[in-house]
Amino acid sequence: MSPSKSGMYPAVPDRPLSGLRRSRAVLVTGAGGEMGHSLIGALAARPGTSVVAMDIRELDHEVRAKCENAFVGDVCDAQLLERLLAMYEVDEVFHLAALLSTRGEFAPETAHQVNVVGTLNLLKLSAEQARSHGRRVKFIFPSSIAAYGIPDLDTKRKAGAVREDQFLEPHTMYGVNKLAGEHLGRYYESHYRKLAKDRMASPIDFRSIRFPGIISADTLPSGGTSDYGPEMIHAAAQGNAYACFVRRDTRIPFMTMPDAVEAILKLAAAPKERLTRCVYNVAGFSPSAGDFERLVLARFPKAQISFEPDLGRQSIVDSWPEDVNDSAARGDWGWSPKHDLDRAFDEYLMPRITARYR
Ligand code: SER
Figure (cartoon, rainbow, N blue to C red):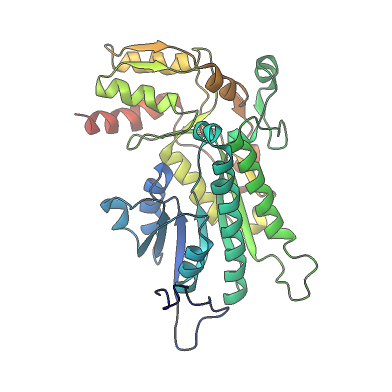
């Protein structure tokens, strides 16, 4: 669809135009990001799934090749989203686009726009999709351990594995935004347009995971505060010195990217009646930054690692839990990570990272 002479895009039809069948697709936003890279491969391999991708930048060729179509643009651009959803019948949305916790503290209002207004745009248009094709749209939203805000280190150390309903007073804009996204999803699923006579009950099937820091062998994160884990490993594999921006005793949960993708696909596939909540913790392993150093040095004895804590970024990770209680995810949809810390290094990270930088 192209703009009319007036420069406006045609109004989006409420229903498919007669004679025009929209093809069914899964929409992935933030498709060019770390998780998008891995998730798109797995989604494209699902029989009968056409992936429509969206990202602020052009996708690299490898990811683009796995998609039916790819749109370059911003999740805040409601007109672009409308155009996209007028072309495809979207049954499932994986809304990965986000501005992470470190970057968000330099531009909190921009983070709010991308992380909350972008999410709201997608939820609204997904609800309209559901109305137009008469089926609920599944909306998968990666949330984060940043949704937690533990007041001080002493409390963090005593808290142990934090449950989903504890310490929900995040210290970062990103955490505030993720918590807002969780609430928006719950609202669209259960209460959207409560007073409207023509409302469709429950247009959205909202499912969310609070992810810990994620470590990928294939990509590096950017703009996050859990980045020190993956940065230390990739720097050592490349023979670069690394100055870690948190203290050696800093501890938060992490997981590998394959486990994160497995979690998101498992939650997406779970029968709705098995789900007792909208938002789930998932845990992998909880090393200290010093544990990362030890494991990296055991495999790259020449690695040069120093610790030069940045007080601001340190205060962010100090407000995140050491561990999370993921018993609801284990019980409801069979969550069980493949990698503990040693297996993460030996079976996933080392073989792939060393091959990558050889
Ligand atoms: N990786 C995210 C960040 O560091 C946390 O979910 O912002």
